Image (tube, rainbow, N blue to C red):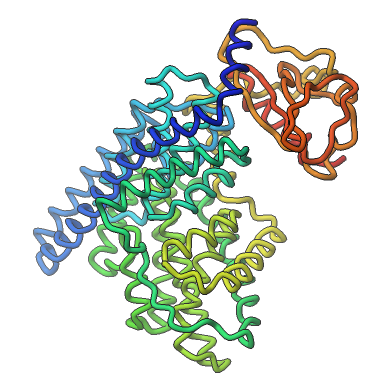
Length: 547
């Protein structure tokens, strides 16, 4: 154990250099994987449009297409049953593993997610490519780690790098990929991690852009900056987006619950409902199928009137719930951006009618609403702002983006709406209690142990249990937390963790019992892999909560 611990600490000292090289490698691998996934989904969308045009007005062909949709549902259902970790977005799964709360197998997840995501978009389900791209990128990082025989600490860093590369390659958004990986996946950063994630993100974006082009995902034409006398509309829009984002989160979670209530519904029959719904909508309203990128083109091109925008939003919203709730392999990221754009378009059209807003600013509100809706749902405002200006190629709306995003964030927070990916992760971990998927069994303690106080110990009792790989984690003490201005020996530290280092003002200190902790201190903690999730929750609570 001492040899293992010593090796882990020595390697940690070389992390900054090691991680840059490994981040470059992960960026190349994950970028190529996601690039091929993007190409596959492009063909899926083209083939779907050709099929819908071919079957239109021909009853026999329509019946044949519905038979194909049933077969697609069966195949995807088999994939989900074979590898449950591919169900849904994939972002909660990555977040859970980085936090040490569950495990995935890259050899199974990579092919199953790739094929499952392709078949779902080919069938027309209202799902996005970003969640699968992030999961595929993270699995690329895990694969690199395991092929190089790295420890769990490095593996989680490389998974974060891969997640960043996945989003960067999916949306041509390297900065947003970096921020999302740090803000949502890893939930913290150090200088070494920041540089490696940036390296991975830029590498993936370069490879993808070199082959697929550098044009932004959304071709916005914003010829005018919104005048400040209209900024009161931004506050109203932010509040509306906060309300709608809260509704969106509740409906998506409720959809999953409704699918699981009937006993006769399983992995396959749930997907049958979603695929058949896509078949029906393909006949009556094909614009809501798939991710919905064409809706943006129609909206900013002035091809949609207010009534059609509202109708499209309602149908797309409900169909997204049917698609995602079924457990199909696909994300909610891109569809929610489309829904946000529709809200912004409807809001601007209404404002133009009743408040004198010049119609030339409709496109501005479309862009702003996408960022605000994303912020209200995911609760990652910085990522939302950066993502939208990277995807649109416009940097002239930064102040407006910030106002809408902050207003949406505050509204959703006041309504006590839990961020969607945290809700999904909690549901995933709850489902694991029933043996649905793999879980790290050591990260939780029974309620009786907690109430008895057996999960904590004084500083003199630092220890790590024997067996299993050692994991290093970093935590920053926030101002006002329970740790601030208290000595190490005064803290009830979680059992089975070892405080190995303390960094203050760029200098590393050896933590001793009488060492006083201060806001801004960066703690490095070692624990066993099986306890990592439990220790993470405990130390997050200590570092961020005041009692």
